[in-house]
Image (tube, rainbow, N blue to C red; front, side, top):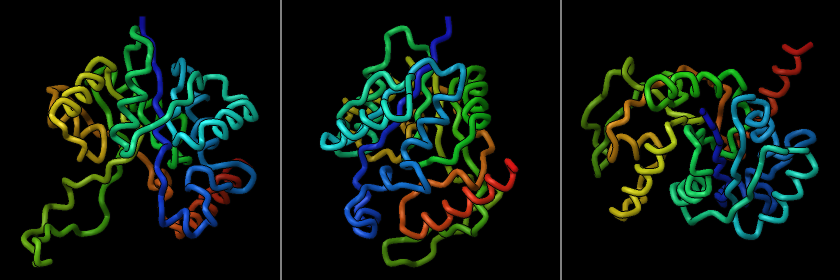
Length: 238
């Protein structure tokens, strides 16, 4: 029987954003009337096939996150756990806490509030068939490979370049085993979960076309973009 759970890493400090926001971490900044993390969790909660959610955050933020879960009736959030120093460690903590009979894990950044229910479902559908799926968008800029001295070494074909987003969805035994391999190897340099699968597992991972609205809020300027995205969605709903 299929059992799908989500892991939401939200333990990052985001120092640049924290400095600009008066000490508030990026995932807890309020956009209009809600914290960024709440938008994120509400989307995952709306996906019918997702049975439960593990939220991984900083030790000092556990109580606040539990309050948000209660305030916004995020009933699918079953646990709020203390994360690690790096995203990769936080994801592994979340994955390790999933039920043993979990069949698929949806991993989504806490600071990506604009993913849609349909996009999450598409990654689940593709991962169910192929083994793994990454929401992504084609790169629009020309990318340069640059050496240590900032000398351009090559220009890869833009047609083959995609910017990876989240969610990244995998068969649960595979992604858990991949993370375990990385821990054993002492490899904490992977910047997303697909990279772990590429390095340590034979699971086929496919790209699922996403949206340029699915930004990860990282810099102060991203908040302006976020406001515009919210405005556009209000217009579409009207």
